[in-house]
Length: 202
Image 1 (cartoon, rainbow, N blue to C red):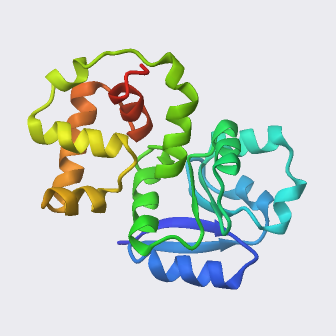
Image 2: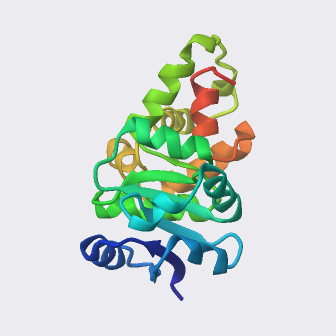
């Protein structure tokens, strides 16, 4: 049975593309930003940043929506500055509305697992911004096997599961399995926390 997600967009192309690419998901379309109030708490929602109804929502309104649901902001012209703004407000993810099919699937899977999706460019921006607080701690390495260290380092650098799998000659399923084990061993819950730990920031 397909998992369910909703999308808010005025763009027929964006809607059709996401619905066709998210093959493991049943995608439902929302008519207005206020319909988020009618969804069950914890719903997974993709919001097109170009949707006209977004301008009627205040910053406090967005924070309330982000607390209520798992919301991915999708932009047809993404920028790190815009991504940081949405993440600071509480979004669960930020991605390109016309991103690669495999990336879209991964965004949905990650956010559905209550994790945060941060693309590679934005991840590097976040790490650079707080890099002055970095410490020289390599304790995380000792808890992992050599293969887990490779996976952890690549994931912390913002590589997708597919890219990690191809680079290491393993399957995506194996990468996911490694990440699950890594999260447990390092007591982190998502890729952002993993990146902070690997890069010595927490």
